[in-house]
Image (tube, rainbow, N blue to C red; front, side):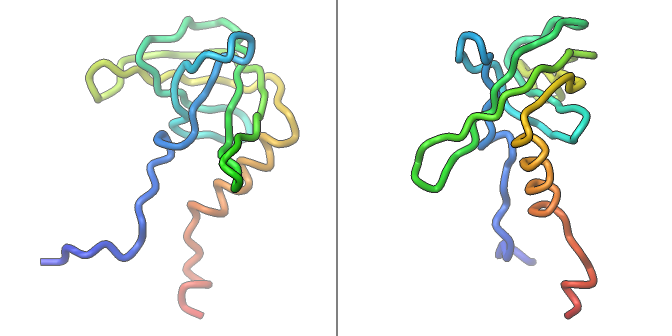
Length: 119
């Protein structure tokens, strides 16, 4: 039976916490993201059809954080498969240029190119 892990597993929600930009209080974790939207995993359901001022705090190499600010509208919110957690979908209204750069980095990091693997 195969038991050794050859590729380190990265849990995105363990790293990218989402904050209320106005209060700097944590509201959840980034479940997934695209140029047009994101999914938030939180302990409470989010209000639907409400605009949220969000901040992602991206860990920097020096141990500090880099803030990425955005405004997004919550389109849906429902209980997650995990008890006491909620998934909420947001449409991006406006975001800093750094948000687009983050999406590009995440797509590159989590993508698998079979052509490169065979080289």
